[in-house]
Structures are given as structure tokens and as C-alpha cells.
Length: 148
Image (cartoon, rainbow, N blue to C red; front, top):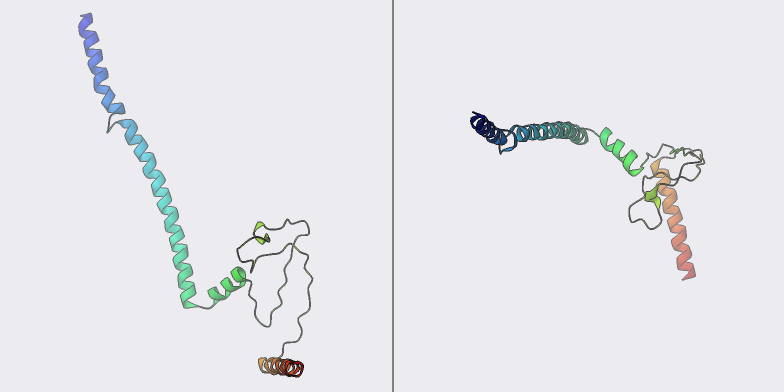
């Protein structure tokens, strides 16, 4: 009788081994479900990112406001009639990207140097500015010809 009990227990253990640790066992199924949940979360995050980028593309294609915003914040551009004022904390460390040996463009990057505000001179019409610039160029050319 004891031998039959031992044989049955061994058979029971042999049947349970593939159920728990085999190719399609419960532990493997649990691990795959965790991987599936992680992948579904990544997919949801990427879907939100793609929707955001798609909206940005539509804004850039349909209007000039998004292009203007990018020019302002990413390239540091301002309109003719605007004054650029930059507020910098006096204790702020220098950004790493402004290192002298950096090959990256610093255009649009903030500087840690103190900022002084210079009042904007009255705007002149472009035609007047162009005439004045042409006049200066003519004077410089005359000086060069006289010196040469």
C-alpha cells in the first residue's frame, strides 16, 4: 500500500512539472501577460505622442502662428517692432551647451550674463532704412576708391 502511495505521488509531481515550468506553463503565461501589459502601455504612450506630433504638423501646415512660435522659441527670432528682454537669475549656472568648444549652434540659447534693457528706438519705415543703408554703402565705397 505504501508503494502505491509513493508511486502516485511521484506521478502527480511529474504531471505538475510541465504545468508549472513547461513551455505553456502557468509561470510562463504570467510572464507573457506582464510583457503584454508593458507593451500595451508603451503603445498607448506612443499613440499619444503620435497624436501630438500629428496636431503639430497640421498646425505647421495650416497656419503661420505655429511657425512663428517655433521661430521665436527655438531660433530666438523677433519681429522688427519688438524688443527682446531676457530675464536671468544672477545665481544661475552657465548652461553646458554654451561651452566654447561646443560645435552645436547657440542661437536661441539663454546666456547667464546679466541683461540690460535698451529702449527700442522709434521704428522707421523699411524704405527709409534701406535708403540710409544704401547711403552708408555709397560713402564706404567712395572712401575705398579714394584710398585705393
